[in-house]
Length: 152
Image (tube, rainbow, N blue to C red; front, top):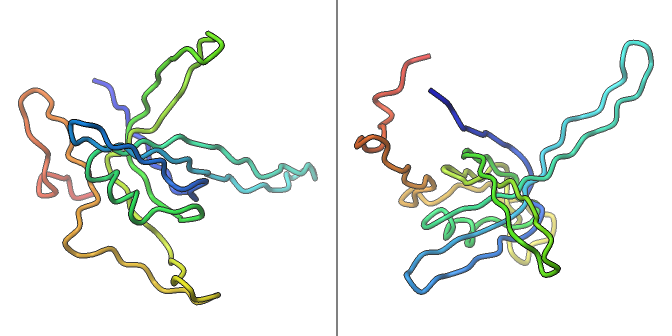
């Protein structure tokens, strides 16, 4: 058995780059920054903040949600899987990329009102909008419902 699961809470580094394909599929890519706060060790050594940047990939309905609601600076919760891929850049150099393929995306915090300076408006997503992408089917089983979760 193996598990490939990532949970991140951070701030979006750039507006999503959204692409639509001829077959109707849509993909959104954006960066997410997570920061571990610095501290002072017992011996007086200063440990600075450490920021990691993550490449987030959303497909289908989740990509449409990202296109509509995710903006630079938005704080988000992302659940997904780590995927690695390689490609050859314009100079023929092989590049390696690690990406987080999002299965779930939740907007956190508040959102600025359009045209309003300094006014925060609590953000709550529309009740009829689903932010969870359909999980792939494994071994013939369909998505696991919340009722199947263990109570702990």
